[in-house]
Length: 181
Image (tube, rainbow, N blue to C red; front, side):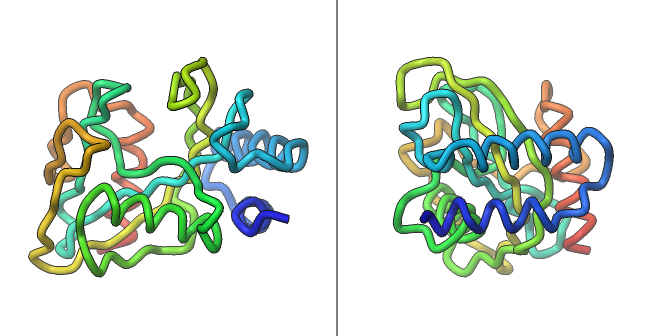
C-alpha cells in the first residue's frame, strides 16, 4: 500500500469539483489510481500522479512561478511524488519548498485543481502528468532561491501573469488568490 496513492484516492473521492470539466478529470484520475498500484511512481510510463503547489504571497497579490526547463514556460512549483512522502499534500509541500527555497510555507490541504498534460519527463519517453494542484502561502518577506530544477523563479502580480500563460494556470491563480484573501 502506498500512503501517497491512498491519500490521493481519499482526496479525490471526497472532492466536490467546482465544474463539470474538473469533475471529469477527477473521475479519470480516480480510475487511473484504482487501475494502477504504481500510479504515484515516476516509473509508471503510461502516466503518473504529480503534486504541485501554487505559492501565493502573504498579501495574496502575487504568485511565485518557475520557468520550467522542459516546458519552456512559467508554471507553479511541483513534481514527482517520492516514496518518503507521507501523503499527496506532503508531496506538494515538499516540492514547493525544494523549488522555492522558502522556509515556513503553509499549504491548504484542500485540492485547488487537477491538470493532466503530456510531457516527456525524466523517463525519457512521452507520458502524462496527472497533476493534483494545491495552494501554499508564503510567509511575509519570504526569501526565494532558484533550484537546479528551474531556469528562473520569480514573483508575478496575480493580475499580470506572464504572456502566454496557460488558462489552467490562470484558473489556479484565481483559486489560490481567492482562498488566500
